[in-house]
Length: 229
Image 1 (cartoon, rainbow, N blue to C red):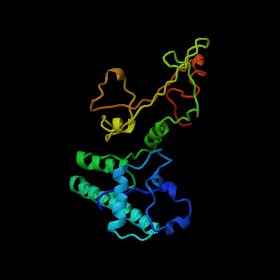
Image 2: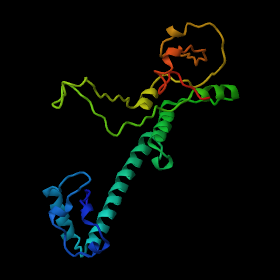
Image 3: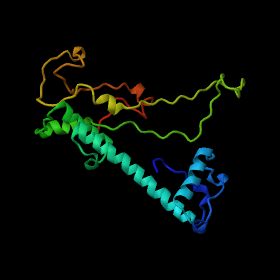
Image 4: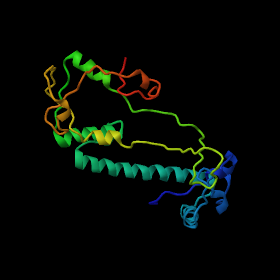
């Protein structure tokens, strides 16, 4: 068996059905979660599976489906391990996340040596300005009176719904020129605005920021330049 089977999830609503000794009809394979019917090809595959493996009950069908699903996934992961070991000399089963694997591979492939911060003030300085991505909870329902839609109401003001998102910010940040070593404090007068992005020397600035009071309410949800208190 070299492909994933199909399973009548909605059909199994009691343990008694595992004792059934015939494959349910095609209609029983309807998936209410995806609102999709089973294809002729998938149902024929389920029938062949039942016959070839000489299954006696739907419990046997269930066990075979689960076992084959796990074995196929294990094959895929073992192949991924082989590729990773060949290319990066890193075993994915020894890291916690895909981003962690990418980080280890990045360090190995580039040969970059990261200097640990030994100055506690430098450590606190950097830690203070680290922040995670912006998180928000969208309204469950939103309605707009858009003149381009068929239900547009001429008697009501125009309104629109726009959802903005930025994808792969972490992936974008990692190829940039990032600080790696030779950290030091400086108070020299530098024209920071004219330093190129690919300069061998970079700066992390601590500044006094003026935030006009008239912007406070407008920026209340997403203030610019936030920092940890």
